[in-house]
Amino acid sequence: MATTLSRRDRVRAATVTEIKDTARRILVAEGVDGLSLRAIAREMGMTAPALYRYFPSRERLVEALIADLYDELTATLAAAGDSTDDAAGVAGAAVPADPRAQITAASRAFRSWALAHPREFGLLFGSPIPGIDAHSDDSPAGLASERFGRLFGDLVARIYLTDPFPVPAEDEMDPRLHRQLRAWCSALPVELPIGAGQVFLSYWIRLYGMVAMEVFGHLAFALPDAEPMFEAELRDLAVKLGFGTAT
Image (tube, rainbow, N blue to C red; front, side, top):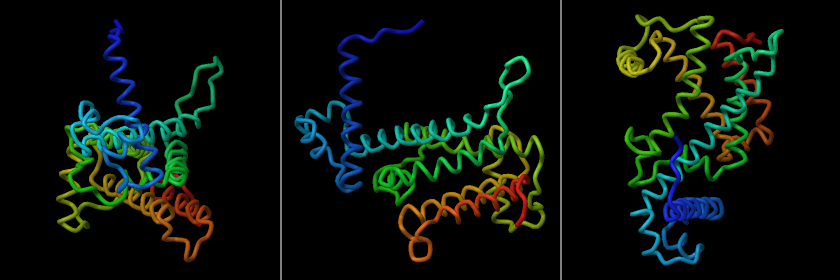
């Protein structure tokens, strides 16, 4: 049964949303350095002390903003993947989407979101901000980050479990890498070979690296239009996941 919020709680929730929306506008206009409680309060017509009733510090406000942005990005990628499920059975029942098509669509959506929101992308995936742990297991930002990572991880797992792709042999791995991958894979919700975990990390490293270099302008020296290179990388990554064709 849904719980009805009191008027006071509704007003408080609306104010929190307005504070975060204002913080995002300042982030877009001025970058992370412009995110101060004083600047946000001034923009909202509040006093800085009044803002402390909602967020005890700048760090907690930024962490809340990071959580919202991760959730927005995750929802965007999930919607892109779901849009590939446009087939229907003879009786009109939806056919489960192909995870191979979903991860390709989600990867393209990741690039599109990043290019459309470079400041927000920088906050999520740029240099860490002192005093803010965006990946802590017990913080809203950390939990939202985990949900984002799980989206790609689940797709790679579904691809592997449906039609296993080639993975590196464990006995040929650098022992230091093997040790770290084994610890990480043991915590995953789905049991996968350690080599599959390495392939997943390789996919993410290349996807993130390509997008980050484009967003931050580090490809402009050679590629005024980086989309063809991005698509070439996606095709190569599809080969790593066993469903692409080498060119």
